[in-house]
Image (cartoon, rainbow, N blue to C red; front, top):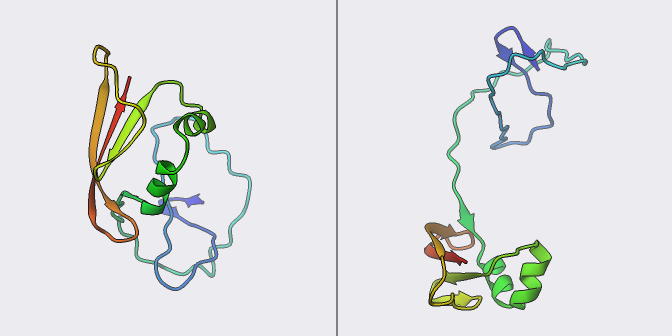
Length: 124
């Protein structure tokens, strides 16, 4: 809830980190708030910007590698062909020699171990 220049959250919090995501937009429309929040017993907290990290799950990679390619594509509604390379393992067919193939390469961390991993996805 926004009151003056203060933002209030009403939530059940636990000991340790409690994260709230805020999205700011430059909009001139009025706020559609129709509730009341008692701020008389509000507890102060110290906000800081958290650093987001992106990681991939080894168990989800293994699950993908163990799933039939056609079934996997159909379950996610993927129309185009693709090939994923993760740590020397390949998933999906090779791209045709004469095709417009788009490749995205990224580095990430394995969620379970924290080890770096290179991932390459080719789409045609």
